[in-house]
Length: 451
Image (tube, rainbow, N blue to C red; front, side):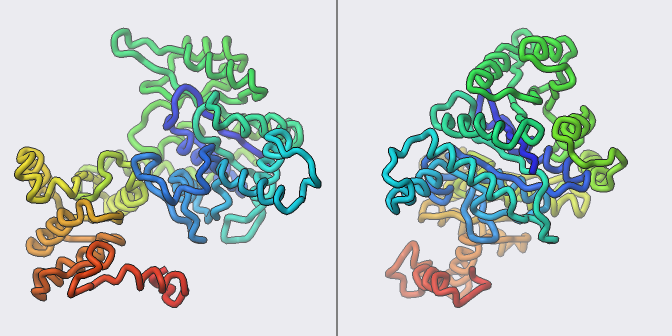
């Protein structure tokens, strides 16, 4: 088993998930079986209770696991099926260690971060890396591990220490570290600054991990002098400094890494059994990326939701729309509309915001109302659904969106004025959606379609 650890420096949200997915993609194009693990240093057991504004959407796996949205990127890029144990959190590790301690598994020893927590992390990674994620049931050959957050965060220290030990346990030829860092470019000077990356790499090395590849996130391609400076001060060859500049589509990132020799380096560094020959998967990938850049016609979809201030809240929905638009050779334009802005209360308080929201809705080719929780904004969603029905616009309701479509039809077509879901109004005389019964059915497992 070969392990590739992806760490991040300077800021969070730098693109480690896309880079980890892209590394896995170019290795899979070589015929290797690749799996992925995401480590989140927060104490939550899983992402299920997060506000979408905290970490974006909660991605739900085939086994019902509620996990970080990066696992959605892994599944989409690598065409694999992950499980809830592919998302490791501090909460899960501490829960497993405390359970063992209560059972007496440690035979009265003092349970400490080192070695008990760090050992538990290593055991979890080694066990999960062997679980098949492909339809053919083959054991993976490469495991890409993304460590969330940034190097230096107090929350991630046990994980950094665990992997410091891990590199010696599995031997150098089976472990490498990719460090993703930011190269800021202040608009005042336009100069690419390397100091944040130097400091980040210095801190990582001080914690016992040495990056094999430094992937530099920047707005424009790295200048040669900047790459050489990073090489000199970060103790790597210039070929180990990889530029990951902004590109029109995330699906260009694997091609960007391939063009800079990442596969060749990893094959040599990890002694991977790969023949360097043209790869059919990457050829198709390039064709898709090129087609995406050449699209001329556009289609606009109004996404009416509660969490529209952060587009990551609806990542899977947006990706599904993007793939659908690409399939019919159209460029997707998503119009984000806060459902509360469509309500009459907003007309009284902020009329400009109200009219702007309705203008967006009326100019869209179709309407999508995604899932959500709580009563806030539901009336605005029903207003959008009502407009789409009357104007005969294409409409898709997902989860809560479909429930509200039923409520809207019952109110405005059947004449049941108080029609509602029992989630929002338990006293409704026309409870067209029985929230409590739905969850009872889920728990009993009597309706697999509903599940």
